[in-house]
Image (cartoon, one colour):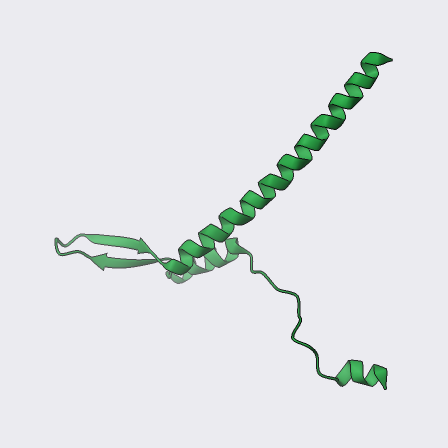
Amino acid sequence: MNYLHKMYGRKSNQSPAYEKNPNRVAGGLKAQGADHYTLVAEDGFEKQIPSHKYVQTLEDQQKKMRAAIEVLQRKQARQESVIENLTNYIKKS
């Protein structure tokens, strides 16, 4: 019964949160032409204003890159401390 319940029973809505790649989202908006609005001012000049969704995707890209940079900086600091410890150990020997 447990196997059948697992196969055909209702599944909870606790699926893992799927995050879209912000680079692909921004690229899709650009490809669709939905990355900006074009307004014509009273003097006849056109202004292109980025859309809210496009700005959000750029902010998401920036957050993701900052997180990756922080992780890499921590790794670099660990590697530098390991190298420093090894050089001190070699000098003592």
